[in-house]
Length: 562
Image: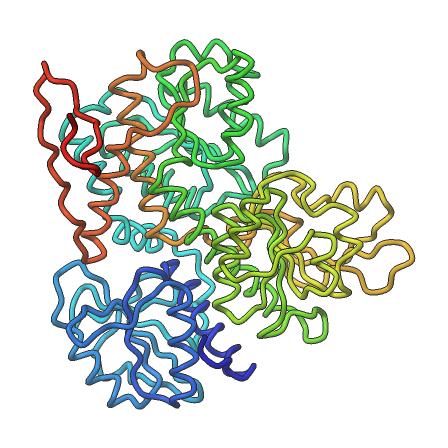
């Protein structure tokens, strides 16, 4: 393992990478990068961090996705010029990460055009080259139209799948309900479905609604049932109003609207082709309904697709939840909390989400301890190099605690009371009461705001208490812009594949949770590899077996079988 950077350099590198991710809403993993100039110690810390997050340093003949400029403007200008020979559509992010002064002379590139808040296009060079400065915060502008356009350009896989649906006319006359986090990527999915011929209606929970994006969809002519200020009764009324558009297909996140349809609109179920669910926590109650014989429609388990769970849960949620957590912590007053560069962190749960959270925390310099009730997963965490301990024990000395289980009461009152003074608790899972807020209040805890989306909970007889971020909500949704664009491109491509399954075979599918067709994973992965500039090994043809001949399964290890 490379030598650890000093805390100041580690903090600078972490802030720079998080700034790029927050400003662009793009993924770090799977991208190639080149670092230009600067102090070798800064460059080494940045290289270690980017590599730990899954990016790859570019070789001399590689196309560069991210050009990190740390040195002089002249060095940066030369590096940009050398990186411009690239296929159309392959985005280059030029990152001005000068630690003490700007490393890029913006005037040298001619007029710059806003692409989204904090991102500037450089049209004098190419349509696919953009500049981000880590030393400048993006303007406080919802800019929904530009954010939706930016998301669309970063979703080639979903665009390709939707184009095929449009060409084949499969969606004409089909009503589709979209019940998901309402942000730019979901807007793109909704518009792709509309452009492919569907009649689309959109619902979102209040804490998952970007009002500017909702208004942008309304301007595009889509009925949107969402309001960030809606009360719980108003949210239920909005969800029922969306169901009253009588969708043939329902795309859900958390299965809340699927379950609401079973509870409040059972007459709708016989008219539906089915639904698709994209979360682990949403599939759990649906499988209970199936076991009871009460599931009234086929539900495609999008979450279980290989191109969803292995990427969305691990890389997308891992990056976005940890980055959002640390961004909020950076906004707190000094001395309010105990989180420091190179400190300690606990991850509760080591499924795909927990694995990703632990990976990102370690890349950022944290010493990670995993608490996992499944002994096999706990063993996996140990083999990955993490310490393993029961949760109540692990949190006693932790600076940061992140729940990644998607299970209610994971961070129980006992766990909260065991936390070190001024520790920070955040959720990367995403079910109600994953942090036992109600139980804590019932146990006499007081809650006091200490900063944006942060409250201190102090129990009777205690002095310092623990800091809980954003009321225990899923932090990348409630305090950031969700998962990176490239990750949601994969997940939404699988959603579109599930829509195709329901359109073509919905009447034949059982009233059960059904797996995604393997072909959907293969097509999604091949298109994504091409978008990343790579190719998969072509499939190996299998020699056909004559119909009248049984396969010979006898061993030849000991000579020809008699």
